[in-house]
Length: 309
Image (cartoon, rainbow, N blue to C red; front, side, top):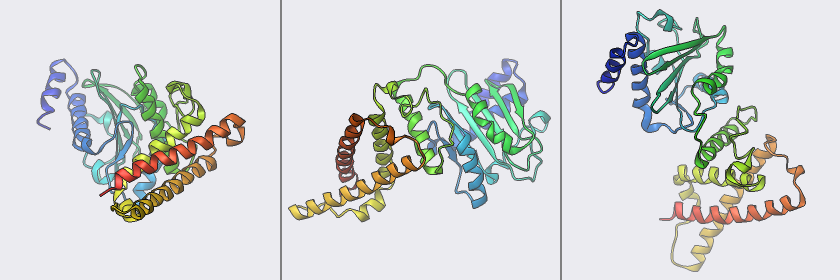
């Protein structure tokens, strides 16, 4: 917090309300504390979460649509209960002390640094969202129920936090992959997405077509999963030795793992109706088969490198 005091002081010196200046500085300190565990464009839970907390997180995860540069935290009661606005700022009090609080913090870094603080607990007497920028309280949204608050999160985030301009190719890729991974994780296609910024829905964003875009999403998703789960893969893939038989067995194991993983993802895409395979032209169907084979080979080679001893 000591590092942030000068920032709050600067805002106060700029004639910002000391209550909002200190509160935004405090919220920023929370984001900074968990920054090493966060990925831009993703809602990061401060866990581990209990079963009832996980249900609230999934409800929020489903509706929180983030542009690729935003930082976002989901805070369960064990953390959120300790984060309280100044007693003098009654307009920022949304839940009584002692009631289990669930907060979502969303930070837009940069010159015009902005933070959104949402209280989404069912126990809140005033669920809603508060918006701060450069130490100033810009405004808020109040909702009658926490369900309505959660359902309106994307609308508020897009209006008041999204980075609307200056997207580069990697931004479209990051945004699309975050949506794709979230959709498969939640097992529903009812996940907000800006189709004009998703290469899965608008392949021309990356100068591609829908078959190549599909396999790009599949490849990037599996490559990330393999890297995150390298320990269990090490147990499934034979060690690399010198004999030709050992190398052949190892590559066969890599191919089996990749094919099973790729087919599982494709089954998820089909089940969730993310793409209409029956609408493929003959040329697209042929391209699909070619890309499947190419992706299996490429991922198998990647897997061999990831798990090699």
